[in-house]
Length: 181
Image (cartoon, rainbow, N blue to C red; front, side, top):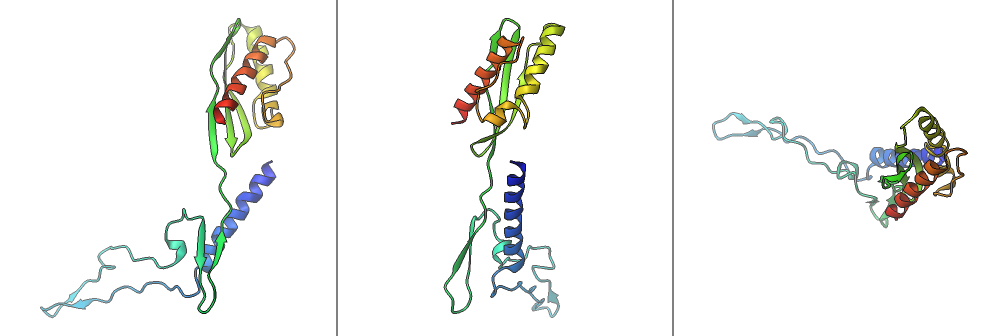
């Protein structure tokens, strides 16, 4: 999963760098305006020397949010280059689910439609025993390598001795998944 994400990110960065560095073949930098002689005989400073921003003519210097750029060569048909789409990262929080040992609340992190992380925002910690069992539930289900990410859903194995907390975690995760749809 990480390798695929890194590969996609690298591809997008490489494509962007090519578009920025290459530019369009006919584009050139805008020269600064030379000083203009004023009626009094002195030179009037150009807009560039007064701190004005130069006009951009290359496609890369325009808005970076464009997904498709078209480059044209003299006498050739325009060709479109499409950059890889960026994955949308979202955090969706499930409801607080109560049980006899305390409250459980889970937040999932999605990249596009894939769950990439699960975080327990609240777990029972009333006693040393419930704290220990909550740690077991958190260790098994949460994180980028937990069961929620591995199984891409709320079909989780019950942690022995922490049945109520496991069920509450499952319900909060399922509600977060339902909210994400």
